Amino acid sequence: MNSYTKKFNLFELIVGIIFVLSSITILRNPISSYQAIIVLAGILAIIGGIFELSLKNLIANIDNTSTGMVVFNGIADIIIGIILLFSRNFGPVFVAILFAIWFIYDSATDLWASKFFKQQNKGYYWFSVTISVIGLILGIILLITPIFSALSLVFLVGLYFLVYGIILIVRAF
Image (cartoon, rainbow, N blue to C red; front, top):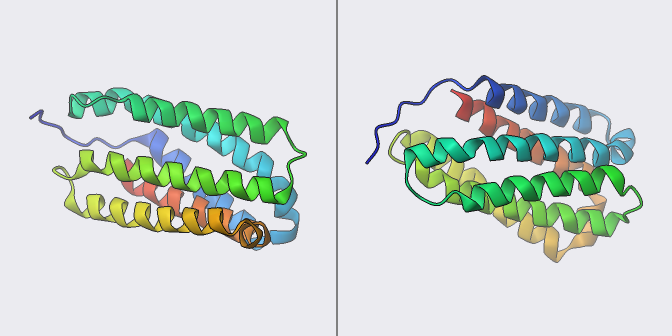
């Protein structure tokens, strides 16, 4: 087993703060946020994807486990971000389904990746597992009921950005 000492990650902290601040803005201005949310989500997806790609070496150093899922998730986030930025004619139901799939996929990936923190930080491990399971449940509900998802899209995206931002801020330390 490799020895690993967690170091402060400034990039992770900055991205986490951006997610939290974006969440506050979305939740405070729901009507105007609806149109802007697709562009914002696209930008944040690209940033998140780049960050996830940067985790490849960290995970490879902790454990000799394949990092293919992390790379795939990073690339998927970047592709989702590009689609959101350049295809603004999506209907609310399609966007709701896309976000449901994104919730499910990111939550599943975070749940999978939490195993790397089990030995180093049990508190963070259980926090990450709990938040990931909540994200999975929320994603499944959104996928099953896209009309509900479309009606509450602004709130749900704001909440997701808040939760993901908190995860990144906690993980940065």
